[in-house]
Length: 439
Ligand code: CA
Image (tube, rainbow, N blue to C red):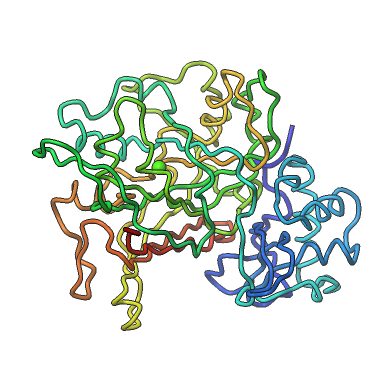
């Protein structure tokens, strides 16, 4: 059994790093975080390789491997991280990730010998690639608030379907169009039909939206036929990132019945570069509760550990930057603030449900949590909800307003964890921009 959900010396609030920027208040990447990414120097033809964030620097893990700075499992893990994707490292399991985290924590703390100094590269000098080859991508629908609001818009008399409170609902998405922060994409073209139109027509999407989601990378996989038990799921989850699951609402409304999302969702999805490991998340686990008036989970989705610490307290924010804001150097406009702890199902329940039929997950497989809207309007994780189905426009505070996204709009998602007695850790950001339709 792993120790990824218990606190250890790497979480100690008192730890400081000899990398000064890591000790600044509100740094996303203090020594207690140590998230992983795939990077190289910007504009270079270097091989992409694994890195770990510390303050405003990246620890180049290929350099750590080459200089043989670590021993044992940490050295084996650093070698796996010198490859252009993290899939092999993810598949080695939590013991290796944990050993590397401990070695990095000890080598980066104040008082250490600074042997890693020659392995540091400024984050401002690097570019990122997808951290893993994502073989399969599954999108869940775990916010009951989002499911109810969206259901009301699509089916006013029947918003929440009866299976919602029993089954962690999901669908198999498309991985080929998942890109890393900085991704741009053309406004999708598709078939839509206005309610009063006689027939559908083809044209650029008129209701382009974002979705505020948490992304989950699978670590060690499972053999086909073997389910991952709820309380074993921590041994199969590598870590979390921010995820913007772009959605074409007008295409979605026309195509989604009876088999669910298709072209409304598969044209682009964007991940943040950094993956915060499950071990780094340990201080921010919280109890998971199910309203007593709601159906209680079936036994395979129920356990004491899941009740006690299955949820995660992660603040999630959406900001919009329009073309005008860019030109006039204005600040991005924050439009919503939510929290992953509102999720109706936990990550462990998603993993247990995904595999209960014997489906095999593989290292680097990716789960979207579904749009994380909270109970309040200000916590809406999509424009569909903020604009109440396109009926109300959102004031951006600079003379501009939106119901859905315009060409040139950039959407930025941020996430962070903060609580008394623990170091604040952040996810960085994911940012991507809508280009005009190709017609
Ligand atoms: Ca989604």
